[in-house]
Amino acid sequence: MVGMKVMVRLRMSSHDAHYAGELVDGARMLALFGDLATELLIRLDGDEGLFRAYESVEFLAPVMAGDYIEATGELVKIGASSRKMVFEARKVISNVRGQADVAASAADVYPEPVVVCRAVGTCVTPRSMQRRAGIVLPDLVLTAAIVGAEITRAQTPWLPISPAEIADEAARCREAGASVIHLHVRNDDGTPTQSADRFAATIEAIRAATDCVIQVSTGGAVGMSIDERAQPLSCKPEMATLNCGSLNFGDDVFVNKRSEIRDLAARIRAAGSLAELECYEVGHVEEALGLAAAGVIAAPLHFQFVLGVPGGIGARDAHVAHMRTLLPEGATWAVAAVGRHQRPMTELAIRTGGHARVGLEDNIFLEKGVLSEGSAPLVARAAAYARELGRTVAEPSRARELLGLTR
Ligand code: KMH
Ligand code: ZN
Image (cartoon, helix red, strand yellow):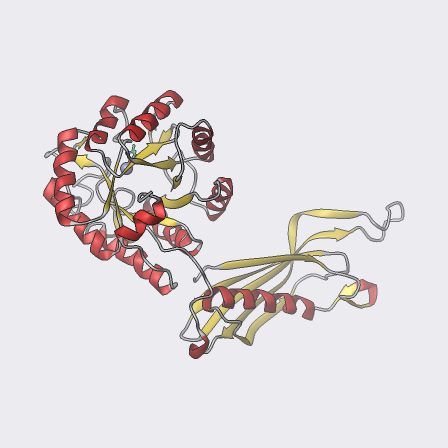
């Protein structure tokens, strides 16, 4: 919603040239901005709306016939019916002119685009015209990562540790909109463990408190062996994580050798669990695709893009956009971003049709310097954002359908 961006790129034709020297009228840029505004309004409101006023327009460089213009529009503020947008037009390619020894058809790509026009304007979609159906997105699966292996009570007093505390937090997250619980467990002293008994006790407590899908971690904590990490599979959970590659994990190394990934994938399958494919790098997506091609894992494929781990792929819109292009038809994807990246990346995924994971495992703050009182407030905020956008937050039964757990 706020932050939504659209783009057009097209070539100025000789019909657009209006002045001497094949110069294009500045109003042509405003026509492009009008189209961008209209697309933003359709995506937001399901209606074309109206352009009400420009508060500023700057023409910064000449545009000529033959130039390729790339124009972008971004929604920066949303009122009850007003929608403020900023626009920019850049030329990215121009014909070479005025050089005697160069053919008339010669053209260059600019190493850096040249900004030709900037504007700020406001559009209006009357309330009665706002359909909220302009964006057709699937129901949203929110995963709550409520424990993790790294966060300590010294960092936040809101970390649940005992099976009862974890079950209580799972129920709060379910109330707030979560349909999947990504589960780690702890010993009584707070240290991470993959003990089958501890998982069994915690899963029993969660099941008594909520109907959420339980997704156990087979990642555990850095340094654990594969046998140790695989223990919770004895509980035959509905879902389990499959970490699809190694990476520097902060100052540690999270080792997932290819042979170990295959081994864990087979064990997840044998447990009757659906693997969530944890990808901390583009290469991990490729690894998962290779596993699918080799029949080691089978559809439905559900990817988790883990963003912003120091040493892994950064939390950037462009990385998410690229990784999405790699996924096969029918695959689902979600985003889990760490620390301050959690909120913007969650909102990006919600806006663009993905699913999302939030919770203390990845981020302990609700706002800068303000601890989240458990994972539920983080889930509630993501759910509110989705509803504001007109996206339905899936109940666990719907999440099971979307993830293919009912097949
Ligand atoms: N604790 C991390 C090293 C997973 O749950 O599968 C690994 C992790 C991933 O949390
Ligand atoms: Zn985890």
